[in-house]
Length: 193
Image (cartoon, rainbow, N blue to C red; front, side, top):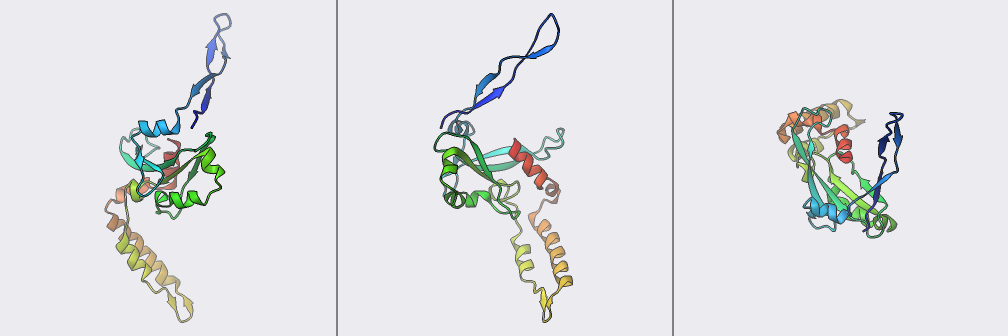
């Protein structure tokens, strides 16, 4: 794939007027995606055509004094033709692995997308390859709850089951102090890094 250019305006100061005036735009070449992946020691994702790279992200993007980090794994498929940018997909749930579905989702895309864009999926912080937090026992118990009656939906039983699930899931995951850093606000910042 060919490098993409990034335009960076430079500023100059003239002595006679002491004002800042724009200088000609400098062009900085972006390394090819394949080169970036190599520089980051990426390797093939399991059972995939994508390359996986794990990056240490700030645990709390909104507190520069907090030096803790959390690993986040990205799956990247470089554009096969002239690169126009990146096509990033965040799978929902929350709690589902984007990397696990990267190949099947990409196969369903219009072929022009992977030709012109680096396709990127990722496992959001705490999920699958980005931490593997899960609570299968609590989830199993929750899904076994019979939240219906002969007359239909039982709101009170379902509310109680959901509350129990939330408590049991956090206990099963084992690190409740991490929960405030697994939200959408932090995940969006991971994509900006």
